[in-house]
Length: 486
Image (spheres, rainbow, N blue to C red):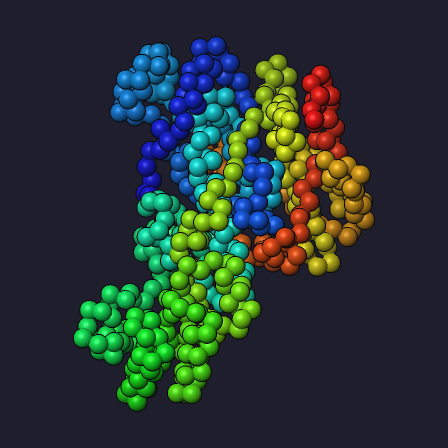
C-alpha cells in the first residue's frame, strides 16, 4: 500500500495490443474516457474516489528488469518491443474530476490523452482503482445519509477483500462521510481518525463482566465505551456499565466520552431500554453505539422505529458494498489525433444496447447550478473549447429523448467545469488534498443535491446532457454508419 511499481497490474491484452501498435507504427495520440453507466446500489449519484492512488501508480509506471524477464518468458513479445518497454515512461496528459465530487453516469471521471501504447497500458489499473474506491465512497455516503447526522465509523477491515481493499476502501469511506475507521494502517497512511472499543473476548478473559468493564475504564477513562451484549444486555451488561459510570463519577473522573455498544439482538428495543436505564441512573449524555451487520437500509429502519442509537459502526456491508459489489466503470476510445492537422478525430463505439453507445470527441464536463439556491440542476458534457456565458439563455436537452428540453434563462444559473489537469506531458501538476479536506469538500458537494436525489429508494434522476455541438457530432457519426440500431 506504500508507493510501489504496479506496472504489471494490467490485463495481458493491453500488452499484446501495445506490441501491435509498436509493430504497425500506429502509436497516434488518442483520447480515452473512464466513465460508468449506472449508479451503484440504486443510488441517484456516485462519489468519485481513487485519484490519489492513480497518481501514485502513474508516477511509478516503469518496467524493471524482473518485469522484462517475466514478459520474455511468456514467449509472446519480441526483443525490440521488450527493449521499448525497458525505456517506457508515461508522457501524456491526464484530466480528472477531483475526488469527493458528486458524479453521474456517462460523464468522464478520468480522461487520458497520450500515445496509444501509453493510454492502452494504464486502462486496467485506472479502472481497478477508480471503480473500487468510488464504489465504497458512494456506499459510505448512503450509510451516512441514512444515519441523519449520527456518526458512522468504518469497521470493515477484517471482512474486506484483502489489505489493499481494506485500507484504500477505508480511505474512500472517510471521503464518503465516515467520522473514523478501525483500520490503524489507514489512519497512519492518510492521517484520518481511528476509532474502536473492545471485543467480546475482552469481557470473556476476566472472571466476570463487571471486572472486565472496571479494568477497561481504568485504562481508557476518557474513551469508555463498553460492549454490553456478551452475556445478557439488559440484565447484566447495561447494569454493570451503569455501575462503572457511577463509580467513575463518584471518584471525580470526568465522563468526557462514555457509553455502551450493542452488537446483537433487537437493536431498536435494546437501545430504547438501555436509554431509559441510563437516563434513570443520571447518565443522559451516555453514548449508545451499535454495530451488527448494518447498512443504510437497516439504519434507516432503526431510525424510523425510534432507536436510541447515536453512533454506528458499519463493517461488512460498507467495505464490500455487499448489495452492489462492482462499480462497472469502463474505459473507451473517444478520439484520435490527426497527424497532419493536429485536430482530434472523434471516434464512437456502436451497440444495439443504446446505453453502450459512447460519446465521441475530446470532452469536458460542466455542472449547472440554480443561482438562487445553489442546487444542482444538470450536468453538461461538452467538447473541449466550448464556452458558456451565464448572462445568456441556455437550452439543454436529453440526448436520447431529445424532445425533453429545459430553457435556462439568463442570470438564473451558474456553471463550473469539473475536470482538472492532473498530468501534463507526463509530469504531475496536481496536489491531492488531505483526506479530511476531501471529506469536507464531499459534504459540500452532497449538499448541492436535492433530497429527492439522495433518497435511498427510487431517487430522482439527475440529467446528464450533451452540448448541442457534441450531440451533432455524435448524430453525424451514427448517421454515417449503414447499420440500423434497434
